[in-house]
Length: 389
Ligand code: FNR
Image (cartoon, rainbow, N blue to C red):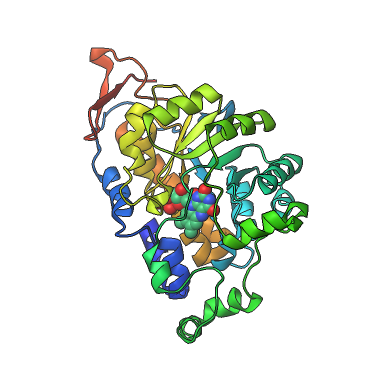
């Protein structure tokens, strides 16, 4: 059967991956309320179409920090991509290169920063701070390798309680148990294409800093440095001269503070519902998030092109996709990622045509002329209005 939407790719990924791998990819924290809320938030907004506005030519490119993205999509940082496809990080990077969109490499990646740089893709580097000396080394390596943006993830002072992983005993250090072996044996395609290469290594954590006994202790504890503060963010701002984004921020006061420190943008995110289960859906925070005027990427729950149009109309510049790209990766490697992003692009294009939007240069922030205005009944907290481009 043809795979016609992201949910189809999810179902195919579920068939292909051992259960403990699929659950790691797909799951959220605790009762998975945030995970469901992320999806529910996108069901709420109503798009009232305008007709007879010529839409024969459609353009979905958007601006991001002085550059043009061909579509408002960036691949989100995700750890352990080597579990979904052999050399998963490199496949994602190559797919992003083919699509002309940025790929964000996680600190918890299996490929190293330098291996990803060698693909020629535009890549951003996502930083987790486990130990300051290690973080400094990673930032310097990312700079030297040409990462064009640094993304500091701030919503993981501790890991979320992912109960699917606990049930599957998918906790580090990972040990193969009889039930895991059975799980793997029932997925021979994955065993042949991924499992036979052995457990993927952590590609970034073998540099000089990791020889330091304090860094080793921090890595062994597998904890983040929960003492990292706003002052540390200000220091990071000084250290990193290229665009700096803060990811995993949701409260309007925090967004203002990040703006004061001089970050270049934020990723409005609840980590795909994998951290604080009571967190709001990023879409519901968007209206307040736009006021400090920082460029905004939104993630968590994007599964449809229409979701991306909704996020864009409600004030986000573009979105990050996490699981959607990973379902594609798990099903078809590099080609699978390209297929999923193209599918989202075609859904965006169709939504634009049906909405009467030849391009996406329409923002809630633009002032409204009564007779020209178009209303997106957001159902979130108020109505957004914008003028024709
Ligand atoms: C993530 N996410 C994540 N974020 C981050 O900053 N560093 C990381 O290493 C990871 N790792 C990770 C692994 C997996 C399997 C998933 C699904 C997610 C969060 C990710 O960047 C993004 O915020 C969410 O995935 C967005 O939600 P959706 O698109 O998955 O619904």
